[in-house]
Length: 251
View: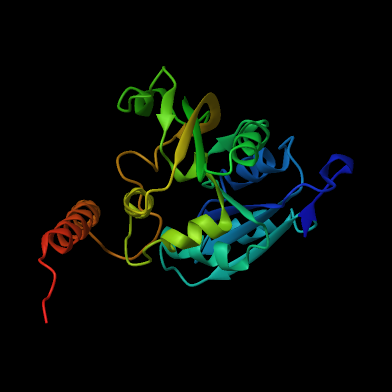
């Protein structure tokens, strides 16, 4: 089901994918920030990555405007991939279940992509905020940036679906760093990007996302995942360089 209005006629559909694991506390706010977008038409796809809390109940309260899917716990990369496979839009966007979009996020980004056909993807800036449920003692332990930052983050991305698939899906094996891995592959493909100067996402700082947030229950070393991402990127670059310098075979 897509959320359309009188101003949506003739505009391309944007599929908004929300991966979530045990996100009952913040999911409703994330969905509401997506529903509040001034751009139409949109569809919102929530992929529940094996939650054991009331995530499903929260998602189903939006059943008239949100499509909900459940999968066994497989990691956020796999959840995003499920959302992509279910998406019907020609553009893709992502929001984590604990973050918020500004209501103009898509309205700011779509004109950039539509006006420049050579542009492949658009990002924007991020502001950070302490979650209201975070106590003072915990706030003293966690730094919340006061300045806005360039948002090379899945939550700020808007991209054409065909372009995304040219790079490929997220690596479902990675427990974290799946967007970093994807962005390395996008750069290797030569995708052209634009960083808008506008804040498009508000990132929530809360007790569960200190350091690297693991979005599933499977055991794993998050540091090892980042090492793997960097090593894979270096290996691809090395193999490409070797291929470029190999002499042509002679008959």
